[in-house]
Length: 263
Image (cartoon, rainbow, N blue to C red; front, side, top):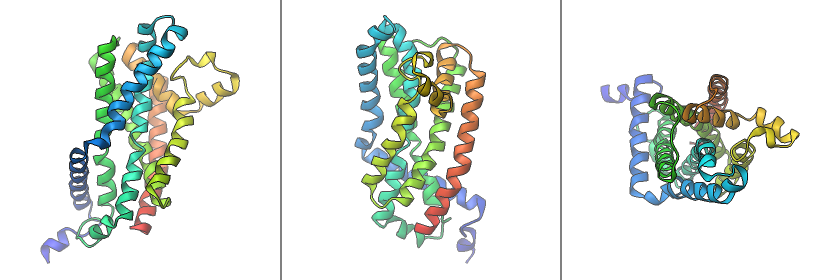
């Protein structure tokens, strides 16, 4: 009786402990199927090579200079893309009945959901390490200090963590994992490519500049550039933090509510 009482869902410390156990489960599942990490290992390398060697000479006149401009923004783009499979994974678990087994256990009802989101953050770390490592091999160099670079990485991860809850909600509302993935790309493409990722904002047409100025991903890219290679950062960092908190405040409760109805 005492054991079951200590594990009653809803008690905050129990929920935290159960969520961490579920996060560990997610990590183990990822490590046992490393092909799930192809999108955060191969895709960043492909994007860097493609954009730097295809556009670098034409846009910046120097591939090295373009790499310095491109990589911090491309880092934001790829880490955000890495947040989309979280919804796909949770949708698959519900569809295959795994969460029905969790429901029979004396754990917090939201623990599998929170643990899944936390566990998938390993994808963000892998994407960052691959991009910075490969970029360094090609000649990318930081223009700031290690603390600023670390701040840039944490800022990008926080924004991606907030976006994860948007995809969790999508995973709860859509019936098929493939549909979650397809809708995820539809959402992410205008958010990540409709930015200053490839060219400076002032070279874009007026209507696209207006979109860039209200796009939270563009603010994150500007913040990452400032923190990694130098330049003004305060305004972009503040906007990115506020956007992240706002997205998290809206979508996390909605995702938990949709999960409780479905699971």
